[in-house]
Length: 115
Image (cartoon, rainbow, N blue to C red):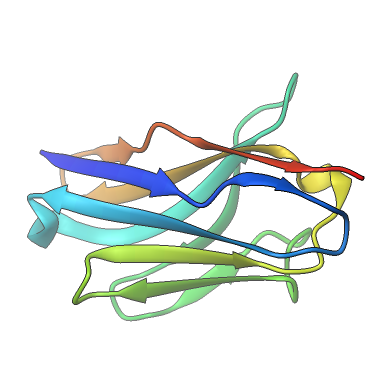
């Protein structure tokens, strides 16, 4: 089992920045890749950014150049740095961890971009 706990969400003005954190515990050695997803009201959950065990990253086109995913192996934590936030980035952001057997999800953290 893997447990994921997110933090760092909140209310921010357009153009502002936030950093989300996702700490993993439990069978962390089974984790292969990590990712962030988001789900806005009335929309399906979508991939925002992912990072593999080798450090390879990929991003949704809508966040390229503004968001950065990073991974701290010593702290078993993955981060999502979000710059130049837009109202359309408003969503619940979910942390994801992929193991050989299954995916694990965090509880989600709300990000609201509004003036």
